[in-house]
Length: 589
Image (tube, rainbow, N blue to C red; front, top):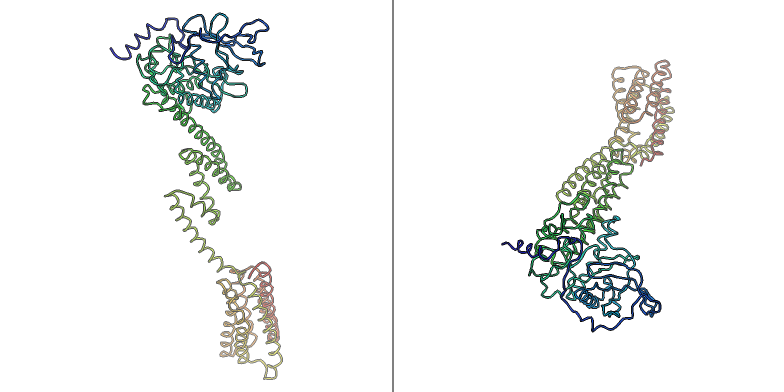
């Protein structure tokens, strides 16, 4: 015969067919007791003038009844518990009173007095608790956090009782009172026994809640027994039904012996269901070793639940971040900061929160590409250092590549930026314009005295103009030729002058008329300014038009060529000076 079969035979003999699975069963209790006749008399009754005047019935159970009473001496309302008419019930009341007296704890109802009434029946006077049974609150529906807060206070009462060597043995929602100010009391210690050497000698407790060892004759009881009852209590609060159910009490106790874990509905968090199932394991060795350990697991769940809640709210910010990035990033910085803060807070609360860890990785995966694409490499760098390997090294490589491309792009921009040397170039052109004006005046005064303009003189003047230009630009050479674009702009001038020297040398060798050579010079200038208009600024078109107008004038009035040419040249330099001045005002250096 198996151990369970033996237990069932014993249980079937001990439990009446009509017994309720949710009612407390007990015959006689172990623990400290007194003969009721040894108790002091208590003047209790419903008559006015009694020191302890009884009032309404507050509740009743299998062993006794509880009435409200007025303590006329101290002017307060108390609760009075009296047993039903049986010697066993009387001894149970006395044992409960002695047990409660040794448990001075905020979550245990204080005992005011123990005595006997005029009929010799034991009377237990306690603090009256105004509030609701936890079972009634649970039926109205409670958040998980609130239920666990209540249960943790029950755990505190049990920890204290175990430390004082007392086992409760009848934990259930009906035996927990929640006061009107939120205070929690573990009630009904009538099944309590001494912890040391406790074994199953009688069927004591509530069948629908019992731990398997409470149904095995001779089985050892201990803190793990109350841990099972704590888990079963939380099970009933969450699901609204006892841990063990059946068509009758015998079927209930048969299932209690098996202690098979239930199928949890989706509304109960998996982590919490696991805590309850471990607390309600069939073998005591498989349960939490103490009430402390069970309470620690509940607190860890609350921390984890808080972390998951933070991660869930951060996930909402992550969705908004994804939308912001897809829409162009107007709110991306703010949404990323909110999401990162939420996920980090969740990980601070629970370092192993998968939702927070995965969500944070996703936030970086969404934000960092946008950050790099927007060009904020300095802002992306510190974020990359927050990543874990290998993501951190991967992003370091991406940032290095982005920085390299930016450096190359910046260098190209600097090379193409005429504004980088606008002031120096403007000053150089101004010096050149001044020098050319002076040079033109000198030519106008001296050439007629030297025999007038000849192809040779024309060639020499071109060479002198190149020399004058070089001397005028020399002081500004470092800035005026600072980058490729500046060199192209200033180089156009020297291309024009060198081409002019070559053109006039050819004209000297061929003996071409002065007007033809000067017109060719001006057309060369047209080409140079046209090139600058394409590669530099559209404003150079004005210089192109000036040169072209000069070429047309020389063609129409060749006899005025020596006067028209310097005016066209000075006018084009004036255009260049104006362009330089405009660039300098625009912020060039």
